[in-house]
Structures are given as C-alpha cells and as structure tokens.
Length: 330
Ligand code: UDP
Image (cartoon, rainbow, N blue to C red; front, side, top):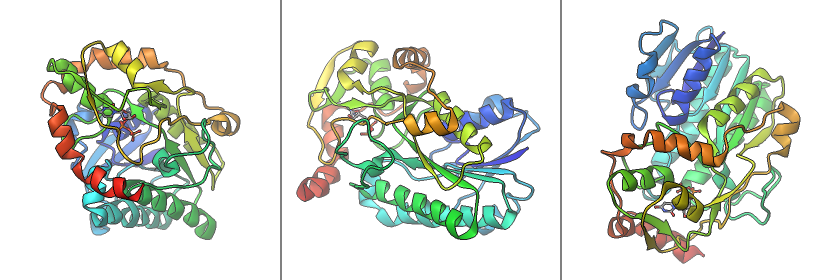
C-alpha cells in the first residue's frame, strides 16, 4: 500500500505517518514546513518507506509526481487557528479551499482508492445540541471554520460528481505530543504546558467551567485509518472522545496557579461530539481516557520549555481582533 499524507510533518499528520508505517505502508508525506516540522518525523528519518517532500498544496506543480501509484490520500494540510484567520482570510481561503481542490484534483487524476479529509468541529459553531450529531446546523463563526467547511463541501462534491471514494472526519479538540510549540496564540494544551514548564499561571478563559471534547491524537489516527479501510464514501463522521471535560478539570490534573482572562465571543460553552455514527458505521471507538492523555502530555511537557509563554496581557493583545470583530457580531 502506498499512502500520501498532506501535512505529514504536522502534529496530527506525523502521528498518522507513524501509524501507517507501523502498518507496513509506503508513505509520501508532503508538508510546506510552515507549522509542520521535520523533527516531528525524526524517529522515522532513516525509514526507506517514508518520503518526506517539501511542497505547498497551493502550488500544483510542486505536488507533481507525488501522487503516482498512491492508493490512499489523507488530506490534513491546512492553516489552523482563529485569530490569524480573522486577520488574513484570503490566505486561509487559498490554503484550506483552493489547496483542497488542488489535492482533490491530483487524487482524482491518480485514481486513488480512498480519500480522507480532516474536517473541523468548529463548523458547528455554538450548537443547540450537545452531544452534537453530524446533522447539526452549520454555523461557522470565523474564517478558519468557514474555510475548513468549504473544503469539506468540496470533498463531498468530488465524491458526488467524480465518484471519488471520499469521506470527511470532523475532529474535536485533538491533543497529544507534538502539538504545536511555536507561533501564534492557539490550542489550550500548548498554551498551558508552556505556562507550566515556565512556572507561570494558566490563562483560564472565563470561569473555566466551559468544556471541550478533548480527543487523544492516537485515537484520531485510528479513526483515520479505519475510514480509509472502509468502503463507505460520501459520509461525514464526528471524531470525539466520548466525553467533555472542563478547563478547570484540566487545570486540576496539570496542577498550578490560574490567571483568569475574559470569555471570548463566538466560543461554545461546550463541545461534545455525538460519536454514535462512527461507532456504528466504522466500528471505531476512542480508547485513551482524558486522565491518561493528560498524564502522557505531562511526560513530554519539557517539549514546551522554549514555546511562547502567554500571560494575560499578551493574550489580550493576541486576541484583540477576535473581540473586535466577533464581539460586534454577537
Ligand atoms: N482556553 C483557556 N485558556 C487559554 C486558551 C484556551 O482557558 O489560554 C480554553 C478555551 O476557552 C476553550 C478551551 O480552552 O474552552 C479550548 O480552547 P482551544 O483554543 O484549544 O480550542 P477551541 O476553543 O477551538 O475549542
């Protein structure tokens, strides 16, 4: 089996590459190394079955030849994070939408057998119902969510029109080792672990009672591989942990002081996936508990030693546009 992973040097992508190599696949990982890092795959550097190619999914010619003989494509490459998506919506559009079209067309031309797209639970916005099923209304609150959703629509459209055997998995708050240690203000685990290893208080948003469906990365990888192995196409599946955990609970597990920062506009009080569809149709279930996942993160917390350490004032500056634009809308 030959498999191509876009964003293969990223946080989730590199864990997927690990999983595929362990299964005996030949893997082509493409990454532009903007947020992905070759170090994420350093344990695999000498594996002759892995080809790591620097290419940007916006650049069709850079990907030429990469899809030759490929059986499965996992499309993970994307721009993430909320604030930069508000600042630069066109960059998000070109990578997350046009880039997805480029990958779809390359996969179609190569006649791949399976195409798996990583979609985002952020498209549910502030849902009426938790646990949230795949049938929930789409309510994108910011350009990142919108562009990931447009990518999802494109994947389903390529299935409908061109019969590309494709599925989309909607990931809920994936965390685990190798989650980003640099760049803009982002996902809570990286923020808190950098604060912990540098002896600073955790910047808890609001009163910390909000909950998130924190899903451990290796569970996300097993969902991706099952989705590729399956013969089901044209479907969207939620991928979550089967629970929803408060920020206060996370702080208790990590241990340490807290500094409160204001609640952000457009944020749900809870994200919680209804995973009955993927359980039923793909026979997938999560296996790493939140407590176990946090324990594993603590084991590698030194990885965040050199990461940016956020404090209430820098969080305020970093989220200025978030309050400015989304605050007005609500
Ligand atoms: N959060 C927090 N402090 C931070 C960053 C995030 O308390 O410095 C909270 C945030 O309010 C949210 C949760 O952590 O409830 C997850 O945030 P993240 O940005 O990782 O994901 P998302 O909001 O997209 O679910």
